[in-house]
Image 1: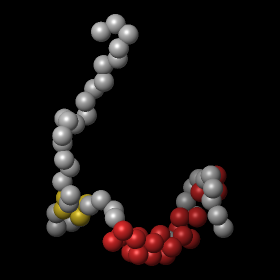
Image 2: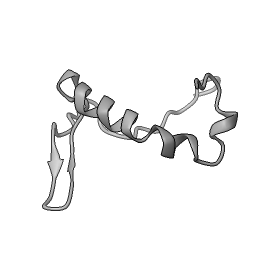
Image 3: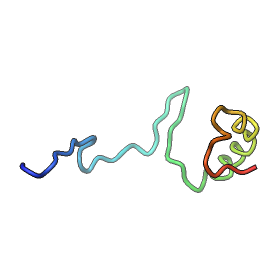
Length: 64
């Protein structure tokens, strides 16, 4: 294998992740267009908290 690198496989080829993972305490699912309204509402309602976080003032591309 001279001149070629070995690449470690993290998941086997063809692996399909589950579309939803949840318990009585949490629920994980990929974000899609159906989540946009709630996600935007959560983001905008938290903007003061986000701006108060350490390091925010140094964030690239920040507005406001």
